[in-house]
Image 1 (cartoon, helix red, strand yellow):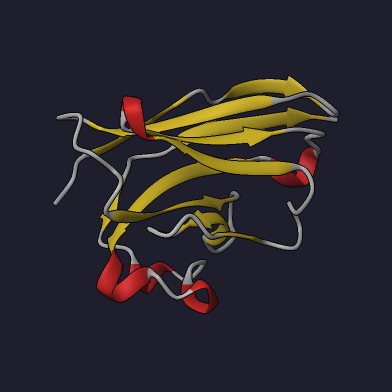
Image 2: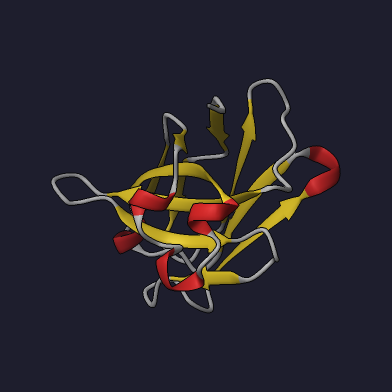
Length: 129
């Protein structure tokens, strides 16, 4: 499996922005993988935030639609999550995930954990209110 590493988390005030990054520790190409971002707030279940499949189709949770953008920089083998207009409900540990296309390419399943086989350790995002 891939060894994914997230970065870019931190503390911001309400209305601020952050950009999270995710890459394999051995710089594996992400082009053949579905990639997703999930988050888990303290005391709550982990939930899907955004995903992109191998065809480039993106999916967003309703709570972040219009504020977050998922993208891949294939030349750098890096996945990004641009987060704008952050609010206190966005405070969570954010996890990057990768899955093989034969399991994860359906956009109807792209925000469910079971289609992803590799996970990072998480990066904390804290939004002060």
